[in-house]
Picture: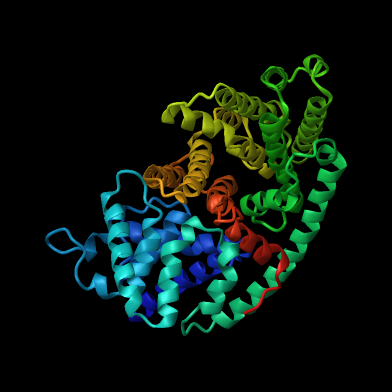
Length: 485
């Protein structure tokens, strides 16, 4: 039994390490086999954790890995670590490694799971209390777990840090380190080539030359492609996904800087109806925007139809009408100095976030499971899209609240707390979508949606100088800096 228990944990530890360093695209089948076997053994034990796994760290690791893979492991697996009064027992509070993994596991909770909410509060409280008492290495590991839990961060961003700080006696770690560094270097070289393609496309479109106040940030836009499409083999898909991201920013600037309300109304109508005759009545700069948008959608549609046998042009156009309508609402609020109610603002903000545009394009570019039913579901902008959009919109608000908070406004602090509470609720809905039976659960599209939500904090964690240090660090780490261990 002892040998089987050790083997069971070892296989989970290996899966965790492979995923954390971003090598899972090489081992899809092997990872699924390991986790399927663990889930099968657990199901024989009335759905609780495998009897081979005994410690808090082992049970929490199993719970997290299985839920990440889409297996609906019940939350009551942690009941064995509670006392007769329903509280986590005292031994749990002394187990630093177990508490860290318990906190990591709690990030995969869904709404209504009280024991997971308790686990998050309990583990974070005790880890913060224990941190000053730990040695330097342990303290760094605890701080990293609390601030950057694996489930809510992009694996490649933390891959080298994880390998550098890994402590354990596993003989396969050195092999994994060598493979991870080689893979990192190869993928980084690929990213540089793709970024050149994106930059050339943006320059050739002429928008930055025609409209000097439109943002010119191809590197930032490309991070969306890196995040949403991890598989290195899908190189052209990453390039193509970056294009609608660039156009979201460009059209947002048109609404914010250039257009009058009358011009913006006509532009919105033209995009919503995809009316070429109406486009001809627009100002030159708006006609250029529409031409670039139309060419981009036609090119992506042709690629999807060629590779996957489905022309998505109608579905790709639809979210552009939605986002332009939302931009127009915000422009009218600004010009009339209207302060919308919070729920009205959030509902419109979900549509103006750009997430529906990005994820609809992602779904078709990935080309998996495209059929009448899934296309109809995508056209309705399902929960997996709206939850991700909510996370982005609320993080945007957090960034704004932090800026006002520098002036010592108490309401800014309250706004930040409320926004983060709602972000947490949106993550729980997103987790549920990954566990619920649907055409999108545990798919590359689901993974892309999760990774877009993971990218969001990097996009809105502003410094006092209004820079984005986390995003800059991500860009340098993933694209420019050589891998060192």
